[in-house]
Image (tube, rainbow, N blue to C red; front, side, top):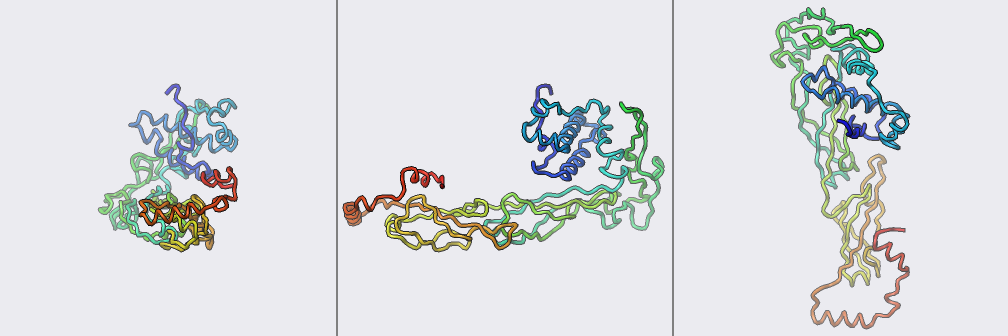
Length: 378
């Protein structure tokens, strides 16, 4: 649409901004298979969607273009004369072949082995389970190889016959014109879907597809220190590949439910400790929330509202550095008593009358007070 700003290429390909070359190429291959106009003839926008994905790949696969985009966005690419231009490629099919060669499978001939898609599922744990590590039993559905026919699509004991249209090759070749002259295009045979063979008697377990939807159960080891939203990759546990290709991976995205008393900040934990005003003046040992439930905290005499008491090593374990832990930061909340009895008011009044400037003088100046109260640190 005229006037519409182009989308972020990272969003188009669905990759993080620190994705490496392999991740970018894999994402584009998968997206291109999904969006290819030959596969989506029913979608009038298929060609524009595919072109958008190809433009995103062209930017991110070129280190110089990618650096310019990361710094200045699409405007930087345009002003630097780096705007992608695909008009000279001829058809979208030619563009696809320019990236992947003649075959439509991301590698090898059409109908050749294709890696299965990745699968994603979620697991929910609490903060304490995230700290100690745990094992979660998950149940999920994936596309799996049919065990009855072992993926060859034929009823056990019955043969496969060669496809007459492609002579058993699984591919059809045709000549197409392009700005570079005549080119030989290769596509998967529609009659046998690139297999090169037909089952004489389709497998009754998978109706001749070679794959089925199966339910799996798995114990997933969640390591200590994992954070909310992080994923665990289990190689080869995803959807089965096609034409003998390897399976994809399974990703388990972990959700760590919020804790009512502990707030996570990286590997540190933060909690608030209510300290009665008399205890704040005199000092005390009070229980504060921790991963173990509670832990005793030494509150020094004269502690001020908003002061932070740090318990070293009492935070979350470091995910990638076993044996290291963050800290537990205890924020002091001085609680002023309310609804005093007559006797209590008299005691407080006597204390107030006895206070001198020496009792109230602070060792810090106005700037220090503001930094402490506003949490500004140094």
